[in-house]
Amino acid sequence: MAIARSGSIPDEVVSVAKAEGVDIDKLRKWLAEGKVIIVRNVRRSDKVRIVGIGKGLSTKVNVNIGTSTTVVDINMEKEKATIAVKYGADTIMDLSIGGDIREIRRELMKASEPLPFGTVPTYQAYIEGVAKFKALPPEDFFLKIVEEHLRDGVDFMTIHAGITLDLAKKAVKSSRIEPIVSRGGALLAGWMLENNSENPYYKNWDYLLELFAEYDATISLGDALRPGAIADALDELQIAELINNARLVKIAREKGVQVMVEGPGHVPLHKIVADIRLMKSLTDEAPYYVLGPLVTDIAMGYDHIASAIGATIAAAEGADLICYLTPAEHLSLPNPEQVKEGLIAAKIAAHAGDIVKLGDKAMARDIEVSIYRAKLDWNKMIDLALDREKANAIYRQFGVKTTSCNMCGSLCVFLILSRYRG
Image (cartoon, rainbow, N blue to C red):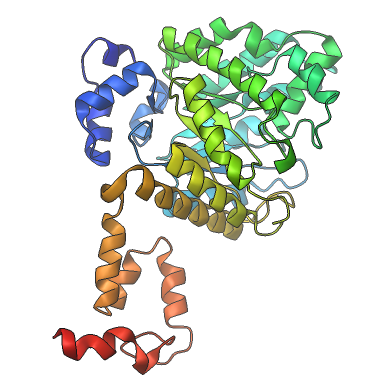
């Protein structure tokens, strides 16, 4: 941000502009204003792909991996990281809460290269802090863990700084169906309520900004009070935290720290546009990182589909980074195949939204697919699929050779019309 504000053009801006087909001067201006971020930690910038997120850029997709308190299998999590890289994730986050969190993070960071790598330091601070102090960790321990993650080279971190002590008290006494569904948010709320003390991230925001500025890493402002039920969407608690986050965004920009804001959550279809527009208005177009949003609460086992429906609308309206959901959401830690399914669904949603948001330049691959489909060139068409292996397996599943596919066979429209089209 500092280089962009000086009027110079960082090499990363040139790289993103070329990849996205965006005017370099516009991109430099958006970066300087905080409307675009380029997610990299200086400690390992040579190992991380240059990824731009924000205004005028294609919608990106994040994959979450990591252990739970009941299932700790580092090899499975590494496999998930490999899948994320193979199938086109743009960023990856480690949400581990079981096992040796520190060692797991470092292993998964290597397995995830070259994707920008994110974490939620609150998990480690709380779990290790309780083990170390035999009580709730002191305020400064939360900050020490953030610094440890930065030293390790973490590129972006979810920091739940917007939930204050006052909001935590209101949340647990609220009429919400599900008062707090954010794991990091719940841990912080419990810490604040037990100590009757202010959020350590909110209280020490200026110090956090100094740390992130030193490593040129990105803060992802967490939404501790995101709705976990569609009935709770866009209520007073969600909006109050968003207003706090908007204030924190402004301060971060003044300090030259890159920041994005996280969003819901569970939101019924007709409220998604309002949510995106409100967030963009309050934050002066800060990059928006949305979890889903899920448009219904009854899709257990298919939440990746419910999420993709919401993500398409969100992306079309201006969401910048989509956090995937898997079929295991609300039910279990996902297995590798479910990670793949969730990622592909989110990528479809992001691309469908970009066709609306970015117009014709987002349709190049679609047009190419359509051309090969009309020519019945199955190999070239399948090569352009998001999941080539699955597309090819379905095409060949009956083992019947035909010029067309086995849906229409000899009555394929392109075969019927071919004599008239030459």
